[in-house]
Structure formats: C-alpha cells, structure tokens
Amino acid sequence: MRALIISGGGSKGAFAGGVAQYLIEELGRDYDLYLGTSTGSLLISHLALKKPEKVKKVYTSVNQDSIFSNRPFLVRRKHGYDQISINHFKVLRNFLRGKKTFGESKNLHKLILETLTREEFYRLKGMKKDIVVTVSNISMNETEFKSIKDFDYEEFCEWIWISCNYTPFMSLVRKDGCEYADGGYGSMIPIEEAIKRGATEIDAIILKTEVTHFNRLPSKNVFALITNLFGFMLDRIERQNIQIGKFMANNKDVIINFYYTPTVLTTNSLIFDEEKMTRWWESGFSYARHKNEELNQIEP
Image 1 (cartoon, rainbow, N blue to C red):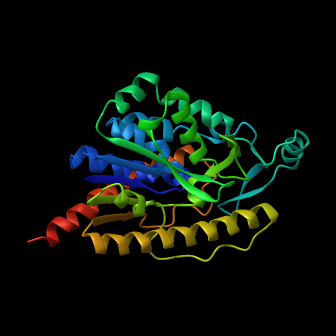
Image 2 (cartoon, rainbow, N blue to C red):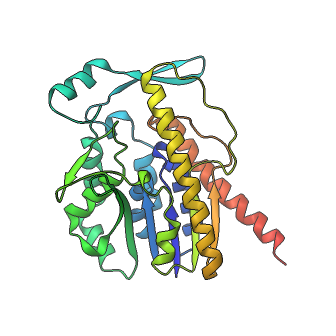
Image 3 (cartoon, rainbow, N blue to C red):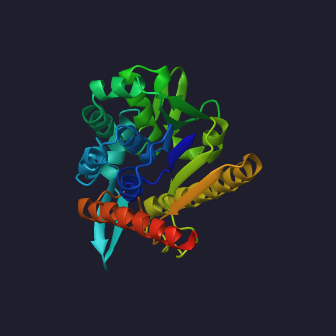
C-alpha cells in the first residue's frame, strides 16, 4: 500500500502542494492512503482527486482575510522582515465575547466548504482510497485520525477545518462534548499512523529543513514570543514523529521517501502572502523534480 503524508506548516503548505503535484502528475504516483495534518489536511482531498491545479489556484490566492474572521495580529514589514504584533482591539473584543482564543478562523471553514464540493466529496468517498486528517482532542489528551469513510460532507469538512486550527491564534472547536484543535499538537507528521493502516511505501512531505539552519530572532513582543514557543514545541513533536516513524519502518520493512524543504521558507507560517506562496509552490515542484533526477542517476 502506497501512502502520501503531508505535515503541518501553515502557509508553507504551498511548497508541499508543489512537491505532491510533481509526484502525481510527472511520476504518475497513485496513492491508496492520503494522510494530512493541519495545512496538509487541506491538500490531500484535492490531490486524491488528482486536481493539484485546482488547489494550487486556491493556495496561491489566499490572504489573511481568507483565513481569519477575526485576525488577532498585525503584520508589519521592517528591515526586510515581517514582524507581528497583537491587535489589542480585536483580541480584547474576542475575550469580551466570551471566546477562549485570541482570534477566529471561521473564514477558513467557509473556504473549505467552497473549495471541496459535495460532488467531489462523494466521489472521493466512493473510491478505494482513504483520506485521513489529524486532529488533537484537547479534552481527552489524545490524537485522533478522522477518515472520510466515517463522515458525511459537512462533518468531514469540519474535521479538515479543526485539523488546521492553530489554537490559541485560531478557533477552538467544541464537538461531541470535547474541545479540539490543530492536529499538529499531537502528530505533525503521522508516519506511525500510516504504517498502522498498512502502508508499505510512504512519500512524506515535511515542511521544515532536515537540519536546523537558523536561530530565531529575539522576540519583539509577547505575541512573537508565543509564536516562537509554539514553533519550538511543534519542532520537537515533529522530530519525535520522524524518529518513531523511522523505527517502525525499519521493523516492518516500510520504505519512506522524505521530502524536506531545502531552505527555511518562513519563520512565521501564520502569515499568508500570495506572492511568496506562489513562489513556494513552484519551488516545491522544482525541488521534487531535482531530487528524483538525482535518485535516478544514483540507481544502477
């Protein structure tokens, strides 16, 4: 069984889309299992339908307003770098309304419903392929994996949205008596789950460099500090996911092809810049082509 896994990574998902487009269109890869976390969950349904150009158009045209119904931060460009700071008015208004998070991402939920049509959903559900998204059950302290086979259209679209909710900057969702948030808090790159589901060959797209290439800039404000702390924790989770995945793969003779970003794309994946994301998509496509050409030259 062949599986495609795409990690979390916010706006960096554009790079993953480019890699996946090359694998599917140029190499003719056909996967039995598509497993995504956070931004990866947004991509996998369209990739399973073999519609990378459709999702590319969406990914490379989104901006902050496409994602946030209440954006809790301001973005300022200073000395060539994007810096974020708290939008005190919007954060305070959200708290006065009784919300538990700094911001809300209801626009992303609407975008998912507009992008993945009901017809496409039922076509996917009728296929032998499985589409699985990762969510974090905060109440039960568990990572859960939601298969398209188990839900109707509205529910599955909601699980995709929940998988992407980078709490506390985005929405915290109460569902089935539990509070749910971004799947990356439990499993950034769910290789272990793919192997448990029977995968024997995996293409894993990981939205970070294989080796750390930078030190984070000093935090300019409390908001930047929080994003840096969350980035640190998610990096640790991702490293652990990869180590466990490699261990399981070695013990079960599973082949894993890793696709890391060759350079640091951004230090804040909450910033959605159309121009950059278009460039990252093309970069991902070119990187996958170059990597596979090198592999072909090495093989006898």
